[in-house]
Length: 149
Image 1 (cartoon, helix red, strand yellow):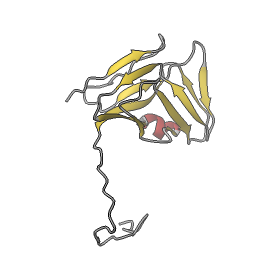
Image 2: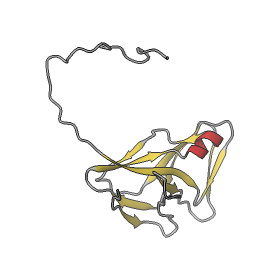
Image 3: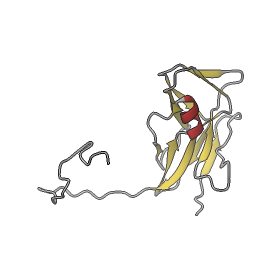
């Protein structure tokens, strides 16, 4: 299935999202930095990086901003709110929050592929307030209540 997404370039240096293979689920997102500038993430740093474009995602869909597995496993650089959500009515510049969970500083240059965008359908909930909920075997058991194995 192909979902039409309109893209508006806000910065002439922006690299528009692109799939890197025929089977890729996510469009790679590249940092859009001023000429000659880099961003260095020290261990523990979180930075919001501009992408230089805006998108119009159709009603009924969202954009999920996810980490790139190579950055996460090799350098500890990931998306702190993964997956971040881009709502269908957002029209501002796309940006990606990155955190360095690694042990070494990590430098990002213009055009570096820093995250990916997956377009996904959204189901909206219709809430009904009730006096009681149905009972289940799990009940109110929360975090870790079902064990490890």
